[in-house]
Image (cartoon, rainbow, N blue to C red; front, side):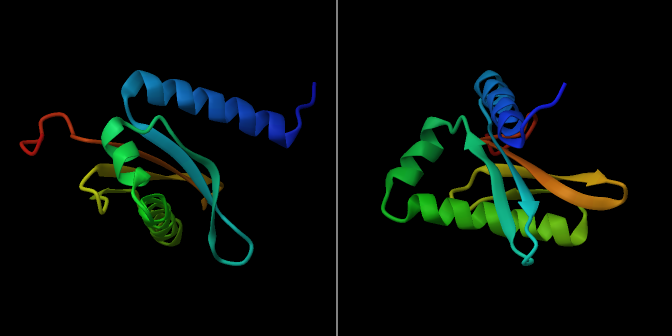
Length: 120
C-alpha cells in the first residue's frame, strides 16, 4: 500500500487538529529546509480564543508565525526542547523529533497555563 506525501500530511494535520481540539492547545510541526531556514509543515491548529484575538490584530499573525519559526530553528540547531513564553504570554513547548541522531522536525504546542503553575 502506498500513500502520497500530501495524503500523509493531510492525515497528520487531521490528527493534530483532533488532539488540539481535545487538549485546547495549538499544535504545529516545523522542519528544517535545505537552505538553512525552517519550514512550517503543519501550521498550528486549534488556537484558543486568546491567541485568535492576538492574531486578529494587524501584524499579529505575522509576529506569531515569526515567533514559532524562531523557536523551531533554535530547537533544530540545539536538539534540545524548550518551554518558553511567546510574545503574547502563552506557554509554548517545542520538542525535537529526532530520527537516526538528527533533528528532522519540531513539534510545537502552546497553552495558556501549565498544570501546577502559579501564573494561571
